[in-house]
Image (cartoon, rainbow, N blue to C red; front, side):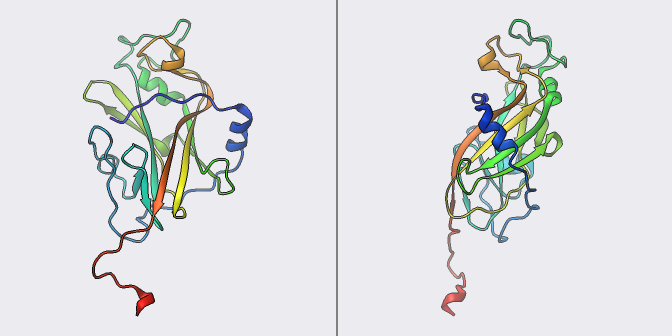
Length: 217
């Protein structure tokens, strides 16, 4: 599975500006121009489009950083992986989970995810979704560890060129994954923090033999 640990907490003033900028709804599902969509494979070779029933191009893993112009796209974030259960979990000193199993603790504390495109530019746009709109729960990896995936609703097409997409998550209490005792590595803070940040490119859709060009009619 495509996994990671969260990035550092964002500077509070910038975070407030991002989360307070409004959140227009993403567009409804659809493939843009109706053409075929390349599927996204994570580093382990899993087909994320098939796994999560996504019709649009997924942006997230290293091999999935390109999408077509005029086509909707979906943002995935690295899976959050925890200890298998409460019995095997280990935590930093003083931490007390609210749910016995660490994966249930994460899902319970998760409030929302905010997706910011082209952060810090005039083209910046922000979208916020609640738990049920983004969390994909109930999965277990080959190593026997449970994980929760974050898969956004579809976003409208962006202009051709380079873009960035940053994911912030908001938790209503601190969460630790049960896999270690180092807070900086194994825990997520209460409030909002950066979870994933990546760049990607929107490219022109390749033409195929036999395509009709109305400008040359």
